[in-house]
Length: 299
Figure 1: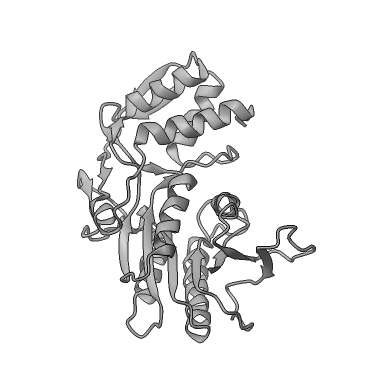
Figure 2: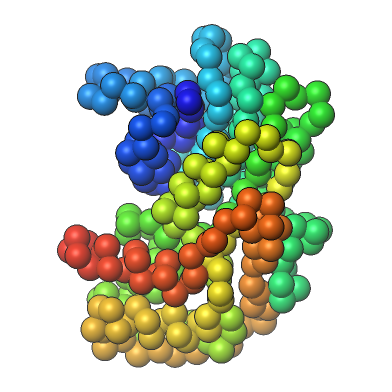
């Protein structure tokens, strides 16, 4: 299967490429915003230079696209929210035009939990209407709308993903990474709603597992799904779990904040794709052990 992946310069995109490249079923076409100075050493990987904010003029036979490319508030290049909004929609529109012209069958779109904006519900399902979303969240929401239009020749699976637990510790997002870095350095951890349930996390291992299922499924329907860890655990248990792994002496101080904690429902995606999603505890354990065994340093 010929699969194009956008956003391969990003942290999440790189990890997905690394894991998906191990699967011999796929020939990967990596779309990069950076100029390509050399060819890939792997036969089943081809590097392509393309700024998705500009029209895609080349022709290419592609079965499916994994659309990871996105401008976000953490981007080093773009910090203006209005620019982020406009560029994300522009990238989506250009990818749609390319897909319709080149008979792409499926698109897996990396949306975000930011779509929902201000959340007051304790359980978030796909039926929750967005409220006071940021321009970044709105860019994802309207990208979903464009990808879901009936006139498109392809089917789209939009994944509303929470923070992704990557092995890159250069950023302070998502929340678990921020806490992890403090725990590794034996610093005090300030957190709120310590006794609330938490599953607002996933990792690229889970994402690639789902991607493989979607790509191999012969028939799919255009739809939107939440996708996060299963079996929530309390925030205090998350912190203590990480402390135990790294043998940390960090103190935990609860902050008072007027913010509702919520858990993410995976019912729709588990029903439709019959997928068993790793638990919150296992995702944290898996990635912390990788970091510990690779001797990562918390900046």
